[in-house]
Length: 235
Image (tube, rainbow, N blue to C red; front, side):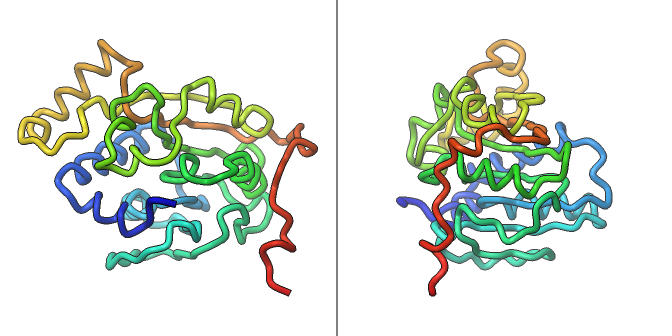
C-alpha cells in the first residue's frame, strides 16, 4: 500500500483537508435518518466523521474498525472504541450493527467484494451502509496530493456491480466539485462552487456518497473469494 493512516490524518489537518472534511460531514448528515440509540460501525479511516456523529448524537454506540494495511498513528483521541483489524474480518457478531460508514477503504483493499460481504454479515436486516468512494471521472483522482488520488476509483456502474448481490443502492450523490488545489480562491469560494456545480454539473463531483440497504438473503455465496481464516490466524 502506498498510503497509511498517518498520511490521511496529515491531509485532514491541512487547509484543503479541513474543507474536504467539513464537506463530507455535511453530505453524511444530509443522508442520515433518525439514528438515535443505534449501533454504528466505521470501517476504514472514518474517525473524523464518526467523531462528528458522536458529538451530535451522544447516545450512539460507535465502533471504529481500521484495517491493518492503514498502518500508522495519529495524535487525535476519540470518545469511542477504535480497533485495528484484518481488512476482511470484522470482529463483530452477525446482524449486530444498524449502520456501517466506510471511507478510505474500497479504493485500497485488494478484494473489495470480501469487504462488502463482511459489511453485509454484520448489518442487521434492513440495516444501512454509507460508502464514500472516489469517482472515476472526477478531478480528485487525477491528483496525488490527496488520499482520493491513490488506489482505485469507481464509476456508478462499477459500484452497483460490486454490491449487487448483497446490498441495494438506495441513493447516490456526487459532490466535491471544487478542485484539489491549495489556493486562496479555492478556500474562499468552495461553497459557492459546490452549490453551483451541484445544480449545473451534478455528475462531475470527485466523490460519491452511496447509501445502500442490506438484502436480507445474499445470493452469491459461491462467488465469494474470501481469504480462509486459517491463512490469517496463527496456529
